[in-house]
Image (cartoon, rainbow, N blue to C red; front, side, top):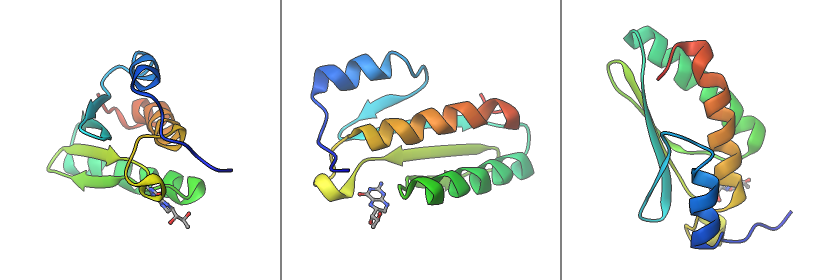
Length: 101
Ligand SMILES: C[C@H](O)[C@H](O)[C@H]1CNC2=NC(N)=NC(=O)C2=N1
């Protein structure tokens, strides 16, 4: 399935459905805080599993009790596409199970 860069207005509309996510330049980003370093590490592994399933991968940063994601789509020159939003949605759905906020 070919993916296209999303128009800015559509990015804004889709971000309205994803509280906590924002556009930083040409990337979708969000940081989460967790209850411990181990909890944050487990969330990173879970996100990695989803990313492998989707064939789409964020820059994923593990802190002491934080997890940060930054993602765009390399194959269209580093623009935001529906693939980035699909990953963001999947991460939002798994975050509560890790106590992430
Ligand atoms: C062949 C493989 O599906 C591609 O290289 C995928 C892998 N993961 C990717 N991740 C991201 N963020 N952007 C891409 O364009 C991308 N392409």
